[in-house]
Image (cartoon, rainbow, N blue to C red; front, side, top):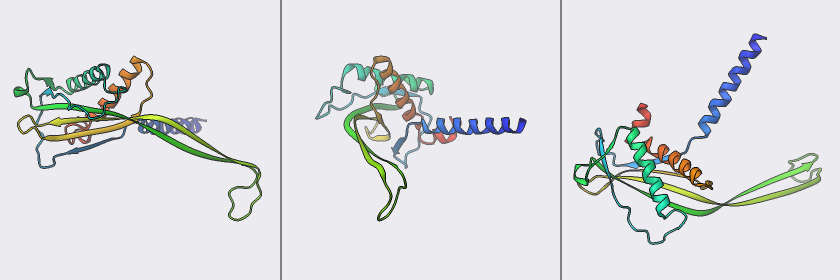
Length: 194
């Protein structure tokens, strides 16, 4: 009896850990590999460039304030402080958010009897169901700029379905994606566990 409890506890822990691993947000980064990233302690906001095409879903004051609050909070938790001016900042930070319409197509085959088969097979009551779902995909991009040269030195990108319906859900959604992106900054931070 003790062995089966230990076994079931072990199986539960493995399943729980695999679910936690699946819930992460995939983030891709790009950065200047020739640059040394010293201890960065101060930052200032850089006003994002005006887009040619605006999307009112993500291009609005509510979203702008939400993203800036999330970035400020995340940098503060990393020990990075907001500088009093651009001249005293170790780096500038800005972001870009976009949303695009996408669709997912899923086909399911259901039948009573033997399936699959190659040429001929016994199928009783077989039918295919295809489901098309339309959704909006949000892409978040956080850029780190060198204040002296105005060059991009680091970029983090993550994308997710836009599912939040209420302001609180939108806050949580943005906080989670910004946290995932900035967990990769500066380069090597996530590998070192800091």
